[in-house]
Amino acid sequence: MVPPRTTPPGGQRRGVLFDVDGTLIDSSYIHTISWWGAFRQQGYDIPMASIHHFVGMGGDRLVDNLLPQDRDREADRDVMASHGALYASHWPALRAFDGARDLLARCHEDGLAVALASSARKKDLQVMKGILAADPFIDGATCANDAENSKPSPDILVAALETIGVEARNAVFVGDAVWDMKAAAALGIPPVGVTCGGINAAELRDAGAVEVFEGPRDLLENLGSSAIGRLLRQDS
Image (cartoon, rainbow, N blue to C red; front, side, top):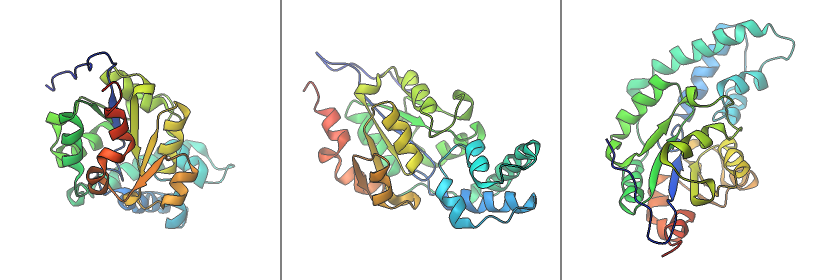
Protein backbone atom coordinates (compact mmCIF):
# COMPACT_ATOMS: atom_id res chain seq x y z
CA MET A 1 0.00 0.00 0.00
CA VAL A 2 1.45 3.34 -1.05
CA PRO A 3 1.40 5.92 1.77
CA PRO A 4 -0.74 8.97 0.96
CA ARG A 5 1.03 12.04 -0.39
CA THR A 6 1.16 14.88 2.07
CA THR A 7 -0.03 18.40 1.28
CA PRO A 8 2.86 20.89 1.14
CA PRO A 9 2.82 23.53 3.88
CA GLY A 10 0.63 26.45 2.85
CA GLY A 11 -0.36 24.73 -0.39
CA GLN A 12 -2.64 22.11 -1.87
CA ARG A 13 -1.94 18.55 -2.82
CA ARG A 14 -0.29 18.31 -6.24
CA GLY A 15 0.00 15.41 -8.60
CA VAL A 16 1.13 14.13 -11.97
CA LEU A 17 -0.93 11.84 -14.17
CA PHE A 18 0.68 9.48 -16.66
CA ASP A 19 -0.81 7.77 -19.66
CA VAL A 20 0.69 4.25 -19.89
CA ASP A 21 0.46 2.78 -23.41
CA GLY A 22 3.00 4.57 -25.61
CA THR A 23 4.08 6.84 -22.77
CA LEU A 24 5.63 4.51 -20.19
CA ILE A 25 5.28 1.20 -22.07
CA ASP A 26 6.46 0.69 -25.67
CA SER A 27 3.13 -0.61 -26.95
CA SER A 28 1.67 1.82 -29.50
CA TYR A 29 2.76 -0.16 -32.53
CA ILE A 30 1.73 -3.43 -30.89
CA HIS A 31 -1.74 -1.94 -30.51
CA THR A 32 -1.59 -0.87 -34.16
CA ILE A 33 -0.81 -4.35 -35.45
CA SER A 34 -3.37 -5.88 -33.08
CA TRP A 35 -6.11 -3.58 -34.38
CA TRP A 36 -4.98 -4.30 -37.94
CA GLY A 37 -5.35 -8.03 -37.34
CA ALA A 38 -8.69 -7.60 -35.60
CA PHE A 39 -10.08 -5.58 -38.52
CA ARG A 40 -8.85 -8.16 -41.03
CA GLN A 41 -10.54 -10.94 -39.07
CA GLN A 42 -13.83 -9.09 -39.62
CA GLY A 43 -13.16 -8.47 -43.31
CA TYR A 44 -11.84 -4.90 -43.12
CA ASP A 45 -8.48 -3.96 -44.67
CA ILE A 46 -7.45 -0.79 -42.82
CA PRO A 47 -3.95 0.65 -43.44
CA MET A 48 -1.70 0.53 -40.38
CA ALA A 49 -0.81 4.21 -40.73
CA SER A 50 -4.49 5.12 -40.41
CA ILE A 51 -4.85 2.91 -37.36
CA HIS A 52 -1.79 4.33 -35.62
CA HIS A 53 -3.18 7.84 -35.92
CA PHE A 54 -6.10 6.84 -33.69
CA VAL A 55 -4.21 4.69 -31.16
CA GLY A 56 -4.59 6.35 -27.77
CA MET A 57 -8.24 7.07 -28.45
CA GLY A 58 -10.74 4.79 -26.73
CA GLY A 59 -11.27 1.52 -28.60
CA ASP A 60 -14.95 2.27 -29.26
CA ARG A 61 -14.10 5.63 -30.80
CA LEU A 62 -11.16 4.18 -32.76
CA VAL A 63 -13.44 1.59 -34.35
CA ASP A 64 -16.10 4.18 -35.12
CA ASN A 65 -13.55 6.48 -36.80
CA LEU A 66 -12.01 3.77 -38.96
CA LEU A 67 -14.97 1.65 -40.09
CA PRO A 68 -17.78 2.62 -42.48
CA GLN A 69 -20.65 4.45 -40.82
CA ASP A 70 -23.21 2.17 -42.49
CA ARG A 71 -21.64 -1.02 -41.07
CA ASP A 72 -23.35 -3.55 -38.82
CA ARG A 73 -22.37 -2.03 -35.46
CA GLU A 74 -23.19 -5.26 -33.63
CA ALA A 75 -19.85 -6.55 -34.97
CA ASP A 76 -17.90 -3.76 -33.25
CA ARG A 77 -17.75 -5.83 -30.07
CA ASP A 78 -16.19 -8.69 -32.03
CA VAL A 79 -13.54 -6.36 -33.43
CA MET A 80 -12.68 -5.06 -29.97
CA ALA A 81 -12.61 -8.58 -28.51
CA SER A 82 -10.28 -9.70 -31.30
CA HIS A 83 -7.99 -6.73 -30.66
CA GLY A 84 -7.86 -7.61 -26.97
CA ALA A 85 -6.94 -11.21 -27.68
CA LEU A 86 -4.28 -10.28 -30.24
CA TYR A 87 -2.79 -7.65 -27.95
CA ALA A 88 -2.66 -10.14 -25.06
CA SER A 89 -0.65 -12.51 -27.26
CA HIS A 90 2.07 -9.81 -27.31
CA TRP A 91 2.26 -9.37 -23.54
CA PRO A 92 5.63 -11.20 -23.31
CA ALA A 93 7.15 -8.69 -25.76
CA LEU A 94 6.08 -5.55 -23.86
CA ARG A 95 8.85 -3.41 -22.40
CA ALA A 96 8.97 -0.20 -20.38
CA PHE A 97 10.64 2.77 -22.02
CA ASP A 98 14.05 3.74 -20.70
CA GLY A 99 13.65 5.92 -17.61
CA ALA A 100 9.95 5.14 -17.05
CA ARG A 101 10.36 3.65 -13.57
CA ASP A 102 12.95 6.27 -12.60
CA LEU A 103 10.61 9.07 -13.68
CA LEU A 104 7.75 7.71 -11.55
CA ALA A 105 10.12 7.29 -8.60
CA ARG A 106 11.49 10.83 -8.92
CA CYS A 107 8.02 12.39 -9.05
CA HIS A 108 6.94 10.38 -6.00
CA GLU A 109 10.09 11.17 -4.05
CA ASP A 110 9.71 14.88 -4.83
CA GLY A 111 6.32 14.81 -3.11
CA LEU A 112 3.89 14.57 -6.01
CA ALA A 113 0.96 12.17 -5.96
CA VAL A 114 1.42 9.86 -8.97
CA ALA A 115 -1.45 8.31 -10.90
CA LEU A 116 -1.57 6.10 -13.97
CA ALA A 117 -4.41 7.57 -16.03
CA SER A 118 -4.87 4.59 -18.31
CA SER A 119 -7.95 3.54 -20.24
CA ALA A 120 -6.52 0.07 -20.87
CA ARG A 121 -8.46 -3.04 -19.95
CA LYS A 122 -7.96 -4.00 -16.32
CA LYS A 123 -5.93 -7.13 -17.13
CA ASP A 124 -3.74 -5.23 -19.62
CA LEU A 125 -3.06 -2.58 -16.99
CA GLN A 126 -2.09 -5.23 -14.46
CA VAL A 127 0.42 -6.66 -16.93
CA MET A 128 1.88 -3.22 -17.69
CA LYS A 129 2.15 -2.35 -14.00
CA GLY A 130 4.10 -5.56 -13.53
CA ILE A 131 6.46 -4.56 -16.32
CA LEU A 132 6.98 -1.10 -14.81
CA ALA A 133 7.74 -2.62 -11.39
CA ALA A 134 7.01 0.78 -9.86
CA ASP A 135 4.13 0.09 -7.45
CA PRO A 136 5.90 1.78 -4.50
CA PHE A 137 5.80 5.05 -6.46
CA ILE A 138 2.22 4.86 -7.77
CA ASP A 139 -0.56 6.33 -5.63
CA GLY A 140 -3.47 5.44 -7.90
CA ALA A 141 -4.36 3.92 -11.26
CA THR A 142 -7.36 3.77 -13.54
CA CYS A 143 -8.56 1.37 -16.23
CA ALA A 144 -11.29 1.37 -18.88
CA ASN A 145 -13.97 0.49 -16.32
CA ASP A 146 -13.39 3.79 -14.50
CA ALA A 147 -14.65 6.05 -17.30
CA GLU A 148 -18.02 6.28 -19.00
CA ASN A 149 -16.55 8.00 -22.07
CA SER A 150 -13.13 7.24 -23.56
CA LYS A 151 -10.43 9.67 -24.74
CA PRO A 152 -10.46 12.34 -26.03
CA SER A 153 -13.16 12.76 -23.38
CA PRO A 154 -11.43 13.71 -20.11
CA ASP A 155 -13.40 11.16 -18.03
CA ILE A 156 -10.40 8.92 -17.33
CA LEU A 157 -8.35 11.90 -16.14
CA VAL A 158 -11.17 12.95 -13.82
CA ALA A 159 -11.17 9.43 -12.39
CA ALA A 160 -7.38 9.49 -11.94
CA LEU A 161 -7.52 12.84 -10.15
CA GLU A 162 -10.13 11.42 -7.79
CA THR A 163 -7.98 8.41 -6.95
CA ILE A 164 -5.20 10.67 -5.67
CA GLY A 165 -7.32 13.51 -4.29
CA VAL A 166 -5.85 16.22 -6.52
CA GLU A 167 -7.67 19.08 -8.25
CA ALA A 168 -7.13 19.61 -11.96
CA ARG A 169 -5.47 22.99 -11.37
CA ASN A 170 -2.80 21.28 -9.26
CA ALA A 171 -1.89 18.58 -11.78
CA VAL A 172 0.15 17.90 -14.91
CA PHE A 173 -0.59 15.12 -17.41
CA VAL A 174 2.01 13.25 -19.47
CA GLY A 175 0.93 11.41 -22.62
CA ASP A 176 1.99 10.40 -26.11
CA ALA A 177 -1.16 10.82 -28.20
CA VAL A 178 -3.09 13.73 -29.64
CA TRP A 179 -6.10 12.40 -27.73
CA ASP A 180 -4.17 12.63 -24.46
CA MET A 181 -3.41 16.28 -25.11
CA LYS A 182 -7.04 17.07 -25.93
CA ALA A 183 -8.34 15.25 -22.84
CA ALA A 184 -5.99 17.17 -20.54
CA ALA A 185 -6.69 20.51 -22.20
CA ALA A 186 -10.43 19.97 -21.67
CA LEU A 187 -9.79 20.06 -17.91
CA GLY A 188 -7.27 22.89 -18.00
CA ILE A 189 -4.45 20.50 -17.06
CA PRO A 190 -1.10 21.32 -18.72
CA PRO A 191 -0.41 18.41 -21.11
CA VAL A 192 3.20 17.29 -21.53
CA GLY A 193 3.82 15.29 -24.68
CA VAL A 194 6.32 12.52 -25.39
CA THR A 195 7.12 11.34 -28.92
CA CYS A 196 8.07 7.77 -27.97
CA GLY A 197 4.58 6.59 -28.95
CA GLY A 198 5.20 7.61 -32.55
CA ILE A 199 3.37 10.95 -32.78
CA ASN A 200 5.60 13.87 -33.73
CA ALA A 201 6.14 16.96 -31.64
CA ALA A 202 4.31 19.30 -34.02
CA GLU A 203 1.11 17.26 -33.86
CA LEU A 204 1.29 17.08 -30.08
CA ARG A 205 1.83 20.83 -29.78
CA ASP A 206 -1.04 21.51 -32.18
CA ALA A 207 -3.25 19.38 -29.91
CA GLY A 208 -2.31 21.46 -26.86
CA ALA A 209 0.99 20.11 -25.49
CA VAL A 210 2.79 22.81 -23.50
CA GLU A 211 6.09 21.05 -24.13
CA VAL A 212 7.31 17.85 -25.76
CA PHE A 213 10.06 15.39 -24.83
CA GLU A 214 11.44 12.31 -26.56
CA GLY A 215 10.39 9.97 -23.76
CA PRO A 216 10.56 9.29 -20.02
CA ARG A 217 14.36 9.55 -19.82
CA ASP A 218 14.41 12.90 -21.63
CA LEU A 219 11.64 14.23 -19.40
CA LEU A 220 13.43 12.99 -16.28
CA GLU A 221 16.68 14.67 -17.31
CA ASN A 222 14.85 17.95 -17.86
CA LEU A 223 12.36 17.65 -15.02
CA GLY A 224 13.36 20.87 -13.28
CA SER A 225 12.57 23.05 -16.29
CA SER A 226 9.42 21.14 -17.24
CA ALA A 227 5.78 21.73 -16.33
CA ILE A 228 6.27 19.12 -13.59
CA GLY A 229 9.18 21.10 -12.18
CA ARG A 230 7.08 24.26 -12.23
CA LEU A 231 4.31 22.41 -10.41
CA LEU A 232 6.79 21.35 -7.74
CA ARG A 233 7.85 24.96 -7.21
CA GLN A 234 4.32 26.17 -6.51
CA ASP A 235 3.92 27.41 -2.93
CA SER A 236 7.61 26.75 -2.32
